[in-house]
Length: 499
Image (cartoon, rainbow, N blue to C red; front, side, top):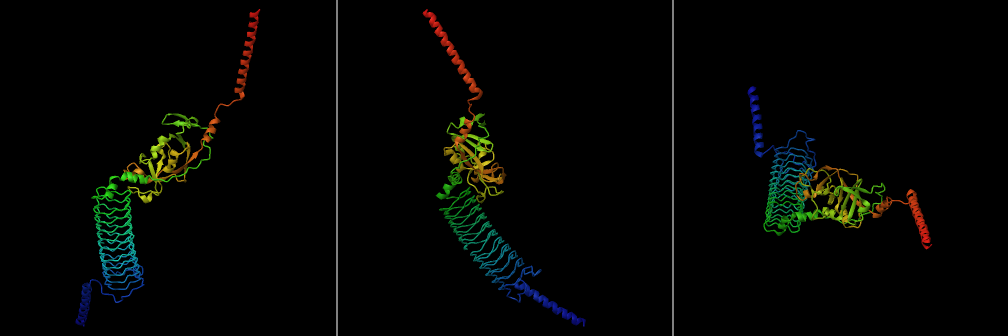
């Protein structure tokens, strides 16, 4: 009996060993009996503890299935149908997805590191924030897919068609992008550090704020591309076509410009060109400030430049002199002194500032965070608190009025600001670059008619009447009396002489 039981156990053990060897030889678990999982919920939520890692799922139909957070590490999904499948957050590390159909599937946040996607169909697939480091993508179809925020470090994308894709903030460091169609692609904020982008089409591409440090762009076509604020430090730009491209704020330090006249022009004179662009403003028409700021009877103030009291009534007699009020503060300045503060060529880049949308710790101010035109920090002319757009000060300098009132545009008394100097690439050690809120207010300027002041000046002139009038009459009467006495004395002397 024992020998029979022992023999039976040996047979079972041998069968288990045979199955184990077959499984190992096939490269995973045994092929599943079920080959159609379409529209089924297979996420770990409903099949807790089920692990598909290493499974042989070749050719299986998962169309419309839910596989969120499933563990498919190393699984064989060659030729599998995953159309419209929901797979966000799944583990597909090292998985074989060769020739798989993943069109319109949701793979957001999945880990596809070292996965083989050669020949896979990924048209319209959600691939945002996906890890594709080390993945194979030869011949893959990515039409209309979304790759925003994904990691493609070191991936070979050569010869692919990526036209018009959303690739914002994608990591393409050390990636191979040779002969790639990148027409109209959105690479805003992308990392292309040391990427090889030889002979690729980037016509109309948006590379705003992209990091292209050390990138090789030999022979690339960047016609009409936007490279504002892009970092092209030490980039190889030999033979690059930049016709119609914009490089406002781009860094070209150490870049190989070869003999490209467009790039040389930008590299040789970026401050003046960029400065003019950043200081552009529209014309405005000033409105009248109707309240009387002189009704309090204060018609003079201390000039800290002249170190003396200045009488407003006398001061505005010179048509070149200006009075600019902000609350109880007043700037006493003339047009010729104010003009250099706002002139494009002479304005101090630390005094010209821009309002930021929000506090941003970025070393350089981001263009997307700037929400105002160029303004003068009025501290430069002795007024603490207000920031006035240059277009209003243009009217102050060239207009006929002499008295002005600064008025806040809103109740915001704290805001982050960026200086012109930092936007031109200067030092941010002591300048504003959206790094913190400051006690400033965006303001406009209105004019005050001179008559408002002149009427107040009249009211302070010496008045006639009362005691003064009586004194004058008394003096006149005394004079007349003296004159009468003198005439009488003269007549008497004349009679004596005749006699």
